Image: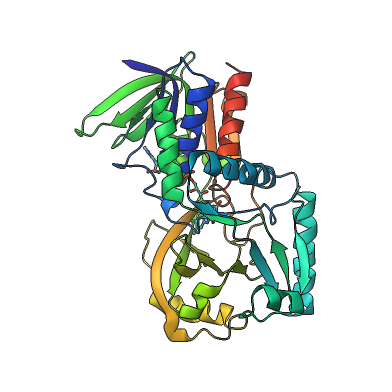
Length: 377
Ligand SMILES: Cc1cc2nc3c(=O)[nH]c(=O)nc-3n(C[C@H](O)[C@H](O)[C@H](O)COP(=O)(O)OP(=O)(O)OC[C@H]3O[C@@H](n4cnc5c(N)ncnc54)[C@H](O)[C@@H]3O)c2cc1C
């Protein structure tokens, strides 16, 4: 049976970042990634806003806060060094009135406590100077928020992992994981359709929407462990209005009060395409269709800030699905990044609930996983 020192499940941005990191840090050891699709980034990593977040929203001390703030800096450095297309656009979180300004002020305090040192509260006059087309009472300005070409990021991470000797096996669908004393045995379906096995010393579950299934297959009771995932869809609409292309910053409303998401915002891609989204709707299955009837809700949420937009400017685009630990009506849940030795599963690391800001934090998540492996190598 083939044996690897470190095996990673999932070639999304997180699995690839881990592969690139451990291939360098533990060079000389055998490292592989198994991915069920024919190429990288076919799920959540290519269905998101492509925003490099600053780390404003998450409770201080949480993994989301720490790994986002650290990951933001690491990602800009990586993009510069590896020539990944990106842009430090800056972002404005708008307040429509005095009560919303209080919400924004709280975000300023949380973000500052999280270690972001460049946040600024601005009034309506300053806002109009920065974005003449936007109407609001005031805003929180985050200069270190930006956008990134996530496909190019994944391509660079894949190339880096391969150049350091890692193996990436596409069309390898992991079916079952059997933990053992010295090694974990992994059953997978190979491209030929046959079921095959391999073993590994370290097993890293970075399977995104499939992470609960993988954790359950190794015998973890996901309800008791708090690993139950809820699928939360985020739809996007194109904003086809020439004036929207003149917006210089990413424009956000205050976040949803229950923190399901950051609110329907305006992002633009590096090619200049302007999008609205995402909303946050819990769903039962992985269906990426966009309901055109939701255009009204999108329009109403941005119209107060962008009076020049008309309803006919909105056209359905795409959707992504968040692997959320926070169920409907529940409060904040953090990322789970856990070496399961206390559960009697040494050598197994589970990453569960890696929703936003997982793209921003991919490099700091990879470093965290590397630290866990180094601590028990
Ligand atoms: C609507 C939306 C907007 C977002 N916006 C942002 C943003 O602007 N900024 C930000 O930082 N983050 C954002 N995120 C979050 C970010 O996209 C994710 O955190 C990140 O992409 C997660 O990467 P991943 O590698 O963990 O998961 P994925 O990209 O889902 O990768 C997991 C991989 O595992 C594979 N896999 C699963 N099961 C198996 C199996 N049994 N065998 C083999 N392979 C398997 C899958 O095929 C997949 O390729 C957003 C997410 C959504 C849904």
